Amino acid sequence: MIEKILPDFCYSSRSLSIEGAVIHYFSAINVDPPHAFNMTVCRNLFIDLNRPRDMRTIYMLEEKWPDRRLYASAHVLIGQDGEIWKLVPFDHQAYHAGASIMNGRKNCNRWTLGIELVGTAKSGFTQAQYSALAGLLLDQGISLDVVAGHDTVRYAAIRGGSAKPFKIDPSGKRDGSGDNFDWPRLRGMVTACLQPPEPDQ
Image 1: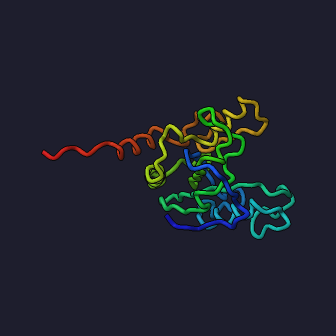
Image 2 (image 1 turned 135 degrees about the vertical axis):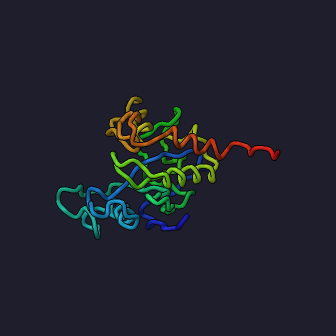
């Protein structure tokens, strides 16, 4: 894991420990299509998303973009080659889930890791990304029972009364049922790593 910590205005303090993870996708497809999956470009976009428009330096400078800061960040960014960048200290709160409910528990930002896979609603993800994600979850001791997509935790919040908009990351559908993200594949990789070794013959 490579530390590429964002400026401190991109995250905030929190008192709760990590007890789960929310999976997202992220790219610069809307602001720099030729370099949409470049890790440095994605990191720079996170920085400008957390500035009001008159303070942005690279992206979203045009009138069509909101004036306000958009509060978007994540603890981890996983590139298509499986490289992991740590963007936010794990004992701090990243701005990744917003209105959210997982397993009946609200406010996922306060108690989960936000993990962004570089990709889009249609791109799917690489074997290297799935491997890196599985390894990260195992390293952090996070059970798959407390791992969900942004789409799923937002859908639960909306069904619970939130007026916030739907999300479709990472599955490609707002209720988490899309096929952009392969949950059985991730589950199989994590399970395989947890299996005890075969005894010597």
